[in-house]
Length: 328
Image (tube, rainbow, N blue to C red; front, side):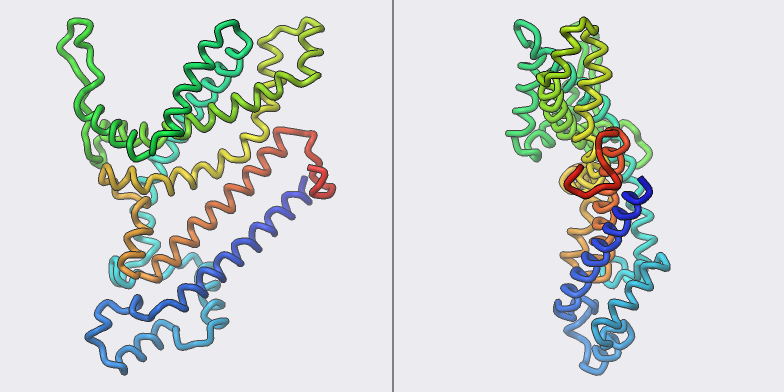
């Protein structure tokens, strides 16, 4: 295990170094207008002094080395255009908690609903009418087939118009949720979280159902049933546990996908988070912030893959950690 963890960590650091080098080099090849707020009004002397102050007149390897040292010290640099002169650390610290709060909450809800739905669908395949599997399949097909933007708008409209009501019980009561996000008003969190979680609910249910059906048809499960082992014990201790092994490696990385996928949702509900920040700074040609945000997303993605591999290995003792990669 220690050898495997060390190998995965070293590989992750190498991947991060390659990503940072490529992104840094590409951004340095872009036009220099992105480093100045009023480029058209500046003289050539002012431009040269500005580039020298930013260290952009140094050779590219030296610039990359300086940027790497800056990252290791925890400094992401300063914004050039988005919020001129403000530390990028400060900007990220203001926006990241909102996105993380919404993203992690939606991910927890997706796990709490998606996994039971997948189990229900899997067990329903062994019944006569397969009603649970059919209803779950309809839900998954709708979520997968309909563009996400369409059902996000539908959720926002339905929630804000008070579709959830008790009029059918003779009570004059309906639940009208805020259409736009307001920090501190927890009622305004409900619709964005629902919008972010519904896609992951379908995703987890679909793949867990598939893996559990595959496991349930294997010989060792048939042997356990022939020996008279209770069906609940088979599903819990064998089928579910083994089916979760290939699924668990994607769960940590779902945090990144949720944050990146929140771009439209955050724009729809006017959420001051990380979702639209990258697009905004690209439009404003704030190269420093573009580089910093790409590095942040790359690090989260690589760490997600790393933690996913480690979780998969911890859940399944059959995976050989110290041997060759082909033995996994």
